Image 1 (cartoon, rainbow, N blue to C red):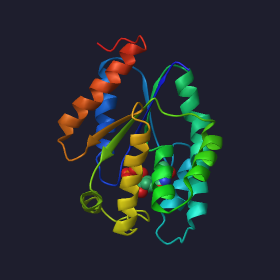
Image 2: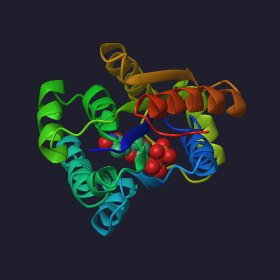
Image 3: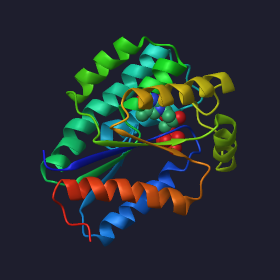
Image 4: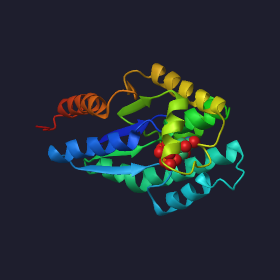
Length: 212
Ligand code: TYD
C-alpha cells in the first residue's frame, strides 16, 4: 500500500476535529490528496451503528458496545480505508482501534487480549502509520465537550471511566512510541498544528513524497 494512514485519538473535547481540519488544509496546500473519515461512522452501515452507539436512551452492555464499534470498523477498513491507501492517498481517521482499547478495554474493563484479537480480525491487522494522541485531563475535556451541547451516551459516563480511558491511551502510546505522537492538548491550536505538520511532513518526505 502506498498511502499514509493517520489516526487521531484522545479523550472527549481534546480538539481532534480542529486539528484534523488544519492538517487536511496543510495537505491540500501541499497538493497531497487526503481522505477524511471517522469512527464510528464513515460508511452507510457505520452511520447507522453510530446512531445506536451514541443514543443515550439505550443501555448497551460493554461486550455489545465493543462488537458494534468493531462492526463499524470492519466495514470502514474494507470500503474506505484500504481502497484509499491502495490509491496512494493520505487517510485521516478521527478515532480508530486505539479508541476501543482505551474505552472498551481500559474504560469498561474488557480484557485487552480479547479486544486486540477481535480488532485484528475486524481490521485485517491494518494499523495507522502515525497516531496523534491529544492528551487532556478528562475534567477539562468533558467541560469543553459539554459547552458544545447535549452530552452523548459516552460523555455521560462517570469521571472514573474517563480517567481510565485517558490512562489507557497513555499506556498504549508508551508501548508503541514509534507510532504515537503524544501532545499536550492544552497547548494552543497553532502550536499543536505545527507539531503535527512537522511529523506528517517528515514521514511523507521519508516516503519520497513532495510536500513543498
Ligand atoms: P464522537 O461524537 O465522534 O466523539 P468525539 O468527538 O469525542 O470523537 O463520538 C464517538 C464516541 O465513541 C466517543 O465518546 C468515543 C467513543 N468510542 C468508543 O468508545 N470506542 C471506539 O472504538 C470508538 C471508535 C469510539
